[in-house]
Length: 548
Image (cartoon, rainbow, N blue to C red):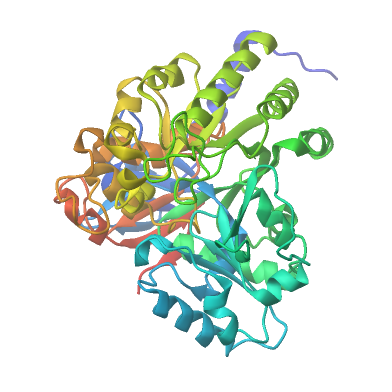
């Protein structure tokens, strides 16, 4: 017998299905910032399974209490916020970096060399020393040379990256493995640094890095899995519940997902020139689910400021014959972007210098006109040194500014030396972009910078450089509020991956991803924000980090 429903009956049935279905499994009570502009603050929320079933005042939410409901009450001096989303990481690489030689805070040439030598003593002969994350600005700006480290690494190839990821140092063993001699030819979109006698120093920039990258041995699947687990544990302790991984190691994420080992939600991108493969995979398997999602494509316009490879209209202040360069030719970027956009994929491209940003905005504008209007959510990654006339174009073109606020207080120590005072006024222009109604989202670029959102919020709110030489903020007119910074790590970050309907704020039906901070960062002095700690990180209603 067939049963037919009228439209009215069907609506009533659907509504009844959405009504309360018994007690909640958990109720959380405390000072809750929701990221929901319609209801910014709440006293409690109820959770069943991995989702939120109610948010509001304590009296109303307690109606969801049952005999077995677990109720957790936090002191109102604490702060509960939606799970923090890091919109720009190199996730598995960062996991590997956690166990590699640590060079970020090496302050002198001597300390740099000693740390590498000490680490080499822990390695087996022939094993490659990778990672590093060094910063030559720490010792005055002199680039390292393979001669510095050859004597302390006689049995191990060394291939260690500057913290921006756009230049690396090879020792002589690594150059030999890559068959690089002083006769090596220049590389388009890259630089092979030489000394005054023409000798290769071991420093290679951007596309020139491929010469060594191609001979570095692949890590085993076991090593990749361990690096992923280390990375997830690290970000969980920082309050990160979702991360956008810019490219690479997609099979590593898939293995973890299949084994139910993910504790961080991942949006995994591929390189833009792989758009056909990504489209085919999505056509066959779909975009993924709430744990592992695909659909984004990454590319590079230019390099980085610290490596002098970011592309500017005018030369660098400290290198008047040099204005950087494009890593990828403009026409290729246009062709790939148009094709990927036509295929319904999201494009998110690295652009740091003002010329790179301007060129990319032009490409996005051209593609939108040619492919027609739709919800495409183009992203520019970094948006570091933007010319004033391009600021309003982000909102006009609906382009998301995906930025990393920690870079501002790091690079702010030396950026004016490289690009001068005037161009620095719109460097990391958080306030100008937000005032112009652009969608600004935050991440870390980990391991280029630490995946520590509280430090990112501190950086965006105070702009106090790491050397403490700008106590009132480096270009303080670009400071933003705590709420604006939090939105960039939550609901707006969710929007940047088409996920605002399932996460990023506390609303009924959304995922129960949240973080408990030991201090209410809305109330404490801005300069104290970086001293706040994560007490608990919860993903899908389950605790993935608890401070002991």
